[in-house]
Image (cartoon, rainbow, N blue to C red; front, side, top):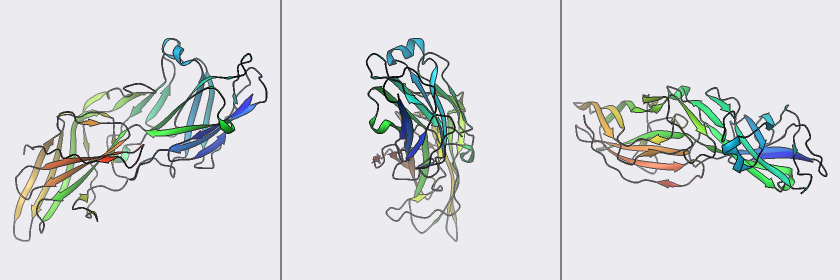
Amino acid sequence: MKKILLAAVAALAIVGCSQNEEIEKAGEKAEINVGTVVKTGTKAVVTDNGNFNAFTVKAYVVEEANIATSGLGTVYMDADYTGGQSKWTTSSGTFYWPLDNTTQKLKEMHFFAYPTTNPKMSYSDTNKGNPTLSFAVGATADEQKDLVVAYAKVVDNIPSGNTLALTFKHVLTRINFSYKPEKGGYTYTITEIKINDVSGGTATYTYNAATPWSAGNNSNVTYEYPLIDNPVKETDSDFYPLGKADGALVLLPQDVANKTITITYTTADSNYTYFSGTKTVTLPAGAKWEAGKNIRYKLTLPLGAEEIKVSTQVEDVNEGGNEVTPDTPVTPAE
């Protein structure tokens, strides 16, 4: 048999070794080796190659057609890796690629990986179908954790160099805000931004599902965006980012049509306060938070009591560089 080598691919490169008892002896042993990459976009991400330092990979020898009816069966490989990019180690033992004695081909294998140290998450493979992760979204930005997962299927042929490449992808949605003053020369002070009555709490992620996320167990959660004290205007636009580089809300993917965002702010000059209060923006029909997307709501704030206009900038964190900025003005209710 040949040792299983694993390599995870996405924006993080990890290599190490794992454990396992032999199955049928078929030719030279090939050990499973592990390496990783965590996908990253053009903007800061919560989990990347620099801070991803522990993951678990589980592998099952099972035909895909049988997973839905019979489940995954007994786990073949269960290994914890620690360290970081190019320095992964494991104390879980050594695993080998399982070959069929008759055909000398690799048996069909399915690999599922997830961060080991995420306290908001638990893994389950006890039911029929693909495994699941139970994941709890923190109530505040400080309590929220990013989530990356990886899946790979290997059948017939052992990968080159006995090494399997795992690609870790971001499966939550990141939310950020920027604002632009409608009129220059005045002082704009934003004191609160809230996203209201969205799905949160604990939800279930299912690997390989067409719709991987269940709804959260709380359908009416309000999340407050973490604001910085002194926003600085972008060099290439008139917008001021309102959060830290890593201060995004990290929330469940979901439909957010007709959900509301409330913005509390004040406009003034040295002589007069023109507006001080809270305005509400209603998201348009068809609005969605998709997995692996970094969404920035760009607010144009009027000087007085007029409506707020908002456009949406979306970046695919897993692909990087795919940004669209459709203008979607909406009328707020004060």
